[in-house]
Length: 234
Image: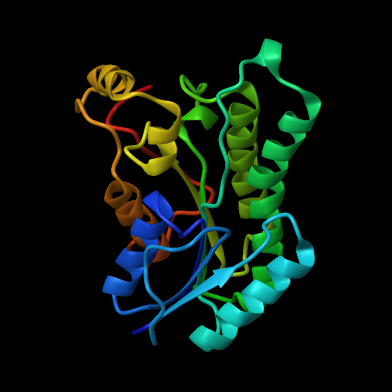
């Protein structure tokens, strides 16, 4: 049975891979982002430009997704920004901006989507291994935001108890994605991969498969869970 799925941060990398895998499952997908998207518009896929920091833009984007899908069954929040600025050099404006995009953005997406979700629906929040320990690549503001997303998941799981709406969070390890390429060299990525027990970085497909699993009936008793997809790196 086809579902209506909303994915934020769908332009490329993990978000694009997640949107594509839901499409491959036969679902109707709306992909939200601020950049040009890799997946072309079609009868099954609706790319939507949105402002993650605007409550009005988020509501409008969710309404378009609901119209496209004939309802809403699954929400995956992946939109994020990263920055490698160390704490000693970090200005307040940069700190607040990144916290806003990563935390406020996910909150606004879920808040706008919640009235459209019902029994059997699922919310999947993307955090990071940085939310389990720290980021070896990004700055402290990124780590703080990723911890906050786990807290958001845990709190929502308690608030939504009994509604039939499940919420879980994924923590990917260091990824092999365009965002990672922007802040690391090939040599740095090889060094990071060598520290992972599986000896490779996380692929978009790795995380996408976890998201599809958490959104499906096989994960029907998973609620408030933190699912690590990190190749054994702790």
